[in-house]
Image 1 (cartoon, helix red, strand yellow):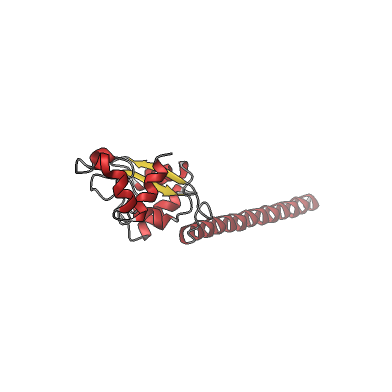
Image 2: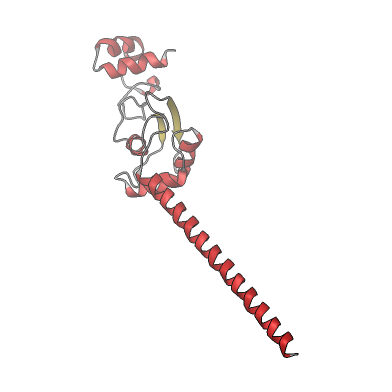
Length: 175
């Protein structure tokens, strides 16, 4: 009987050893997985790479009033401007544009970084952007601009007027 108890004890010890080894292996794999995921997330936050190289594609984005940063990120992801809305939220929190993104209609490009898009969404860079009621540009809503001669003389002002940028953006809208 003593041999039977000893054999059972040895088997029990061996089984518990394998069980411990399996638990340790699972813990090691979990730590590696979490570490790799955290590294990839951090890398995506600080490595701002545009979705497209070269000229890219202009995409019109409408941000509704009261949209959260995460909702804005989801819109940008859906339009193919960013890869991950959660990464965009963290980038916004770490940027100079924290709590400055505004509702409106914007023209963004797939070759822009998240930082460049945030500058436009915060209205700190309004070059080539649609009018938001402040009269900076007349790309999209010409009915909101001041002055009656805008409809008749808008093309002349774009060609020989203030800047070449408005003339270029006007030709893009006439297609």
